[in-house]
Length: 304
Image 1 (tube, rainbow, N blue to C red):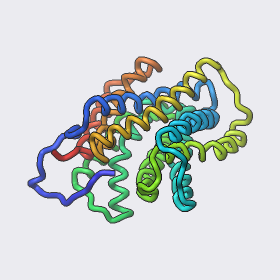
Image 2: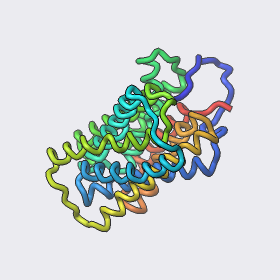
Image 3: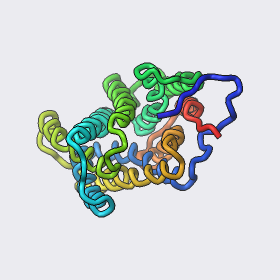
Image 4: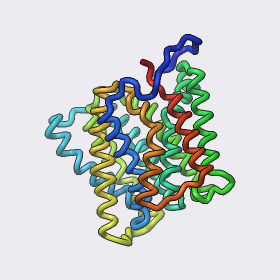
């Protein structure tokens, strides 16, 4: 996701937000961060896989008319359709399936955002290891510092991560996000992004229904009102509005604009989770959050 270059002692000074338009970036960060609060709220009243079934079904139904009205009829080759579908299964089904299962086990919203914030840096590291792309020293250092921050937030007690199982699911979700990001290159630019998002949401619904029936049985809703609000927020705000804001951010700030603001997700999520979910952070956790935020900020900085 990030451009990598050789390490030199004369690299120009840069900051993470150089060249990034403020309002689209601020809106994108707020919308993206809110998903880490809506997710745990959703799994409190509906089981994780059924929440995802509803989220992606509703999102696909919202995106379809938008794609038709703004892009016309779908034109896609069979090869591209397979690529878009495979990417959607990873980026939507596997990524959110593992994260929402972790939420149900007790993973805190802030920690989930913290893990995902490492994605741009992990993607760069994986691109270097798997694709032979050049990796800067700052990217490696930033990733190490970011991981150290996560360890500090966890401390000796991993209950806030949902135990060992919750933590492993959160890490698996991070891996899916990074691998899925690399997989977006496999799709290329031939498929319209709105149609691509529509297909990626729709293709996840059937396997998630099968998985939900096998693992969770028939759907049960604790609070219909809370479930409706959570699903509509996840589908309409996170999936649809988030996509539109991402497109605006990329058009105005460049392809790396979204990666360059990922370091802001954990602190914004922490505030939202404190207000809406009553999540509390210890002084050590705040220190770890700051450490990880700095690590990701350094590793994803945009050159001026």
